[in-house]
Image 1: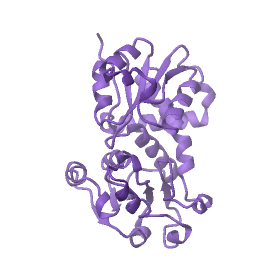
Image 2: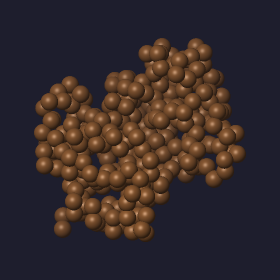
Image 3: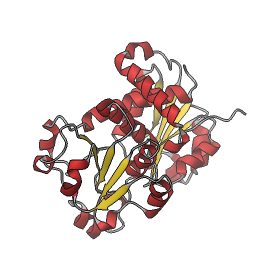
Length: 307
């Protein structure tokens, strides 16, 4: 049996492949009609064992935009996992019905296990606090469109850096580009895990600084990547309530930011960016949502081997 290619971590893609996906997605933005039938007759299965709005609908929208079809479930309770079926058995079964699978799971490593048993490519649509490679591709496409480059950028990450899988993935991706500097802004309890610092930042010699003061570092940032404090990752409601409002971005906190700062957020937002910031041209997070559809279209085509 020919080994199919899956996407579990952003590091599964070379820098050249990321550039190629970004170029394809950019062409799709300009010429959507040229891609409208690229996946005619193909089926995407969305296996979402954890709630999602944007990621699941973005995958579905991507496949439908390519002329394909979609089936799947949006919560574990509506799948045979509720009866105790293993992830391996679920994907073996589903890959008899679908050509490609997008899977989100609360357990770290579950999509990797799935990819080892599936007969179709598996895309990791988020596993616990671990990885979220298609959000990272979305972030990269946004950065390319906002900044015109990946090199020589100072990227600030603010909020929940401990459990934020989008943060871990984007730091890994940006660390591969020359001149990247990383600024980490979080409460003590939600600092970036030491394994990410060791395995990515220190190993690749990326300059980084840690602080609890967002306004102090604001003037040096080219990109500000805001994140929500994730209630679902906390064992203790008191800790969540104490930390959830650690950073709230308001227009007055942007007074000393660069004119061409780009503000990103993987969404959903709770209250960590005031709605008053939405009017600021530097707010890129809803443009980011739009880019997510096109980069997933490019990825689906790539993994299905469609030119």
